[in-house]
Image 1 (tube, rainbow, N blue to C red):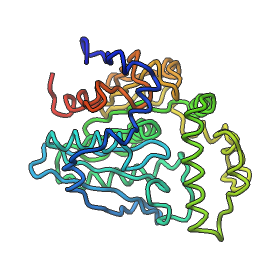
Image 2: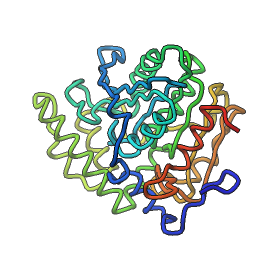
Image 3: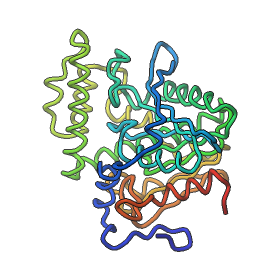
Length: 322
């Protein structure tokens, strides 16, 4: 429920980990999903020979076009993506769900491994996706790392606008990736969850390209930070871990001159993203920060099976409702 636009979850859903876990719980993606029935796979040329997979679900009578970006080690089939996609599609939007490199079942598409600094290929894929909108207004919604990408895309649009892109919504974005990594490592539940998924992804990459990769010794590292350290030691790309995190952080001035209308939604109780990371940001007049007391990470659930606060808010923004 809301109070003057604020998110106030029911008491039994008020815990940060309850919100965070339920956001990815498969039960929320159950039931009929016309968006999935309308979905078809597309392989996009993201530049420099990079191929990225996406899924287009056209609406028969569209009022707009929404692109969804998942979080790190999520995919176009993550619960929060399927739930939000179903919500937007039911309200008249065509939906495009993009997979980052090495996310979902896409490890075979590119030899190089995923790095979060890879903004160009995601930007190019978004540009190509918006080109499928047929002149409809386009909107971008990103979650967690996808929210970080969304903010970097907003900044990049100052140099290279994407035709038709009207609004960007960033949910629970990673502002300082180093501090977010440490926050996850400090949580046994989140650390276990992300290490399990990352190790599985690395094993898949190694199976497909055994002549290029052997991650067996890397995967023994017990934390995300130490695994990142080991990965750069074995497969260097010119960054140490801290330099890498800084390379895709959102700087204090990065959003000051953004012209594309942008809305950031986060929560003070997010266990993965320190809320004080947002305090240093200087926001331009086209950027709005909404920080709720509750919501966890990618949560903001109003009920176990109900729409989320950000889905309702984004739909109002996209349809210009008051």
